[in-house]
Image (cartoon, rainbow, N blue to C red; front, side):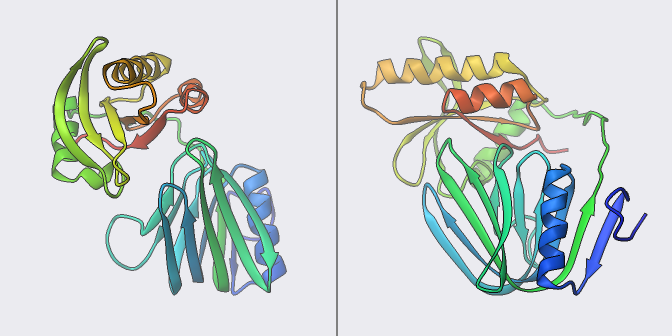
Length: 246
């Protein structure tokens, strides 16, 4: 299961050359494989805010659904990440392997530059099993109220079950820039109906507030269908993966 054959279930390179590491990552992206790298790198993010991490040893995971996670040796949460739906690219600049992850709604860019690469692995993953959840939407809501940064850093809940002409918004709040945020919670994998529901809440808030108010809509659930992901992007809405406590 290991080796350099592109058809292997697992391909791993240890202390690879820059060219070999770049080729492995690019091939992994093209084949829609799970790609992981470990090495010394910097991380830069630009989007709703900006952040920079200096050189450090980090583990980076790029998933076929477009998400990317940057982990250190501490905490269960990544130090930086991008959600599903992003576009990954790999290249070489100034003798560094550079990973770029971008999405258009909202406009965000994460760049990881590897000074040293200890290991690159790609995995052909097959997992069609649905996650079975026993938690409720109330459990998910309480989890977010206890830790609002599950939605995003700087998110502040202001009310629950906030009434609108389209129905009650699960969590009404604001982001770190003071923009209004409507959060719709679902305890299971969801499809286009949930996206339509969130869109109606956002439209209702625009009518309740004022026409030029900047309102963000965020759908929170364990996962969404491909069609739902397309509709979220098309309508300028967002997705965060989170599940009720077990």
